[in-house]
Amino acid sequence: MQIKCNVLDRQFQMYQREYEEAALRVLRSGWYVLGKEVEQFEEEFAAYTGRKYCVGLNSGLDALIMSVRALGIGAGDEVIVQANTYIATVLGITENGATPVFVEPDMYFNTDADQLEEAITDKTKAIMVTHLYGQASNMGQIAEIADRHKLAVIEDCAQSHGACFHGKMTGSFGISGCFSFYPTKNLGAFGDAGAVVTDDKEFADKIRMMRNYGSRIKYHNEIEGINSRLDEMQAALLRVKLSHLGELNQERVVLAERYTKGITNDKIVKPQTREGADSIFHQYVIRCKDRDRLQKFLAEHEIQTQIHYPVPPHLAECYRRLGHKAGEYPITEAYANEVLSLPIYTGMTWEEQDYVMEWLNQFYGI
Ligand SMILES: *Cc1c(COP(=O)(O)O)cnc(C)c1O
Image (cartoon, rainbow, N blue to C red):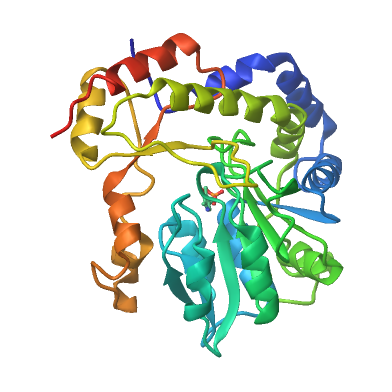
């Protein structure tokens, strides 16, 4: 049996008629960028996350870059960020000329709140939190520390659509919740798309202007903006998917529970969920000391896996100028050497999953 990391057409087939209707509606409308579908989606997604405003954008990276910019954070400022996040989170900071200050993750792969205070200086302006792999971060403690030091919280929710901390949606804690709708995400479009959610009207207005060349009224440019508009097609398709997101997330939770129950190999460390936090299992990430051999072993049996992420941002070639060294963030670096994301996707059959587990349990390691 051949098992891929992702089989994107299965989720299309599940709701094919609805997607096709939405696509035709847009094609026939004669209006293709920033229109009624985008407005509707923004309203629906704001309601879903429990926020007042949503601004649809081109990508998750844009959501991060624009959030930092709209807060006036730039050269000379520092933003704290977990060291094991995806490069895009860090690019959101450095694209604005600000400096990322890395902190180690906790045992749930999220920002270790106990590390924050030590990283705060008089230049710190914000804490950027990634709800990595779909699990909500420790938002109680993080929000408390941010409040006490008067720091903005920006949430990278690219992997956490619908995940909650004590019943409250990720993306509703900080001034800005940044979402990606890249096709592989839990709420994935059929192309690139992203959004910012917030309760702050001024902030929302600024992002809205910024996404369309800095103008509220066409050709009247108040600020130096960019083009990060969401198109009608993606918005219409996202509305269909959003209406099913509850069941889609639940399907992954069930698959994750099956992995947790079915994997019995003591060479493998299974992911844990924090008290009070939900995970929507964007990824199911195991750890193994002999990870590279395990990945190869699985590949020999036609099981595809991924590593999120093999090179932590502080050691990425593009950030050599920051002067970080190997060994500086030992927990992050150990994760980079040990993590492995197992196949988990909408429409994955139990038979496929049983096949993955069968081989996982037969791996003997060193
Ligand atoms: C996917 C992702 C992004 C970037 O989203 P794009 O839409 O691809 O720009 C940012 N942060 C994290 C954690 C992601 O997984």
